[in-house]
Image 1: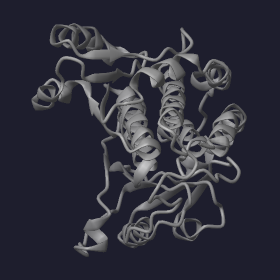
Image 2: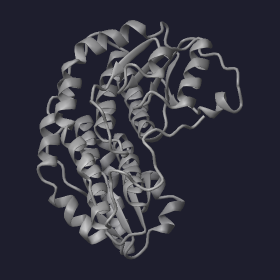
Image 3: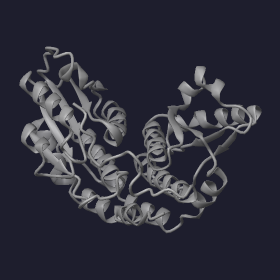
Image 4: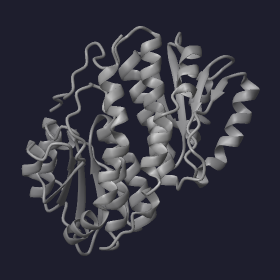
Length: 332
């Protein structure tokens, strides 16, 4: 069954996050120095787990920097070979390996068309490092398990700094100061995820729902469950779930609700009532109380990692090396 690699890399997260938080002042100054003036907007470029971090960043930029933000489609450049004017834009490219070919190609095209490109990667010697104006490292150390864990939460934490630094050269690290301790507490208490995995080990599908900043945590949790178990898990906004997809949620259907600790959680109470009326099995994994929203969302991601690993072990699969997956997906 294994899981030793994934467990060890999950356990390293408090130390990795503490290093990221310790760099906030230097990272913020470096980001602020390269932001175009005037700034037209910010666009995130990523795939996989990094794309879920990009969703988090897209919300944060509009909330904290007050600038329009969005997500890039790499195929616009790698398949359609579009010509786009990127002058005045900051592009934030995220890749744990820094080696995904389409991310590199899109960075090159966008930078050549006038964008300032900021890269976030775990490998400072990767191809991504040669195609950006500024590189920020997750500094997480080698990640050997195929499901990304410590590099993902480090990306999320760095994006908290990036979003604030766009507007101000000096950024306080206070929103994340409690994060390493909160993650340590979750890692020391795997029982909630283990108990839920024991009940849900026979699932063939799962809905993971959150809204606002927690939407990114829902996406990442669903991806981890898919990667490690083969369960068809869908991460979705609670608002989107209330539209057509609610038809897939019926008596006995499992729904994991992600509480982000922010204003968007007001929708969770109404959704719980609706799910109860439909007889669906709705659950929410606990995190330490009283955290700032950004810290709570990242801590919720760690709970999601625990659930994915425990589900894999309960189903007698190896979460370190899921079938048919590799560490770097060479999309072009």
